[in-house]
Length: 83
Figure 1 (cartoon, rainbow, N blue to C red):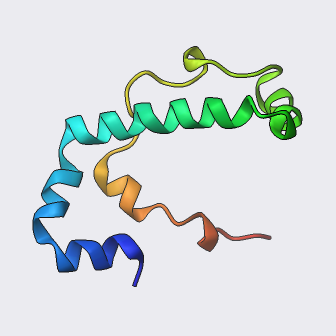
Figure 2 (tube, rainbow, N blue to C red):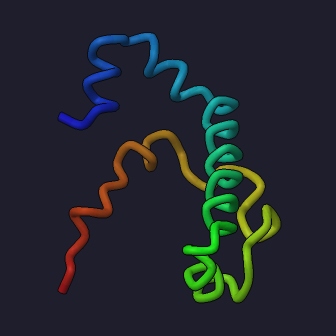
């Protein structure tokens, strides 16, 4: 069981809070900000250059969250076919 599934099972009201559009938007904005700061670290410059051609800014990401609550929960990149 994934950690968020366990948390939702133990604290059912948490799922309602997580599903809230405003909370998802806030989480998106925090994630974008954290990712930009991560790219600003010297050890990550090469990746920034590879994907953006420079250190990214907020303008390089969608302003509004591009995913629904359900898409966020369903996303499992570790299960993608690696062929």
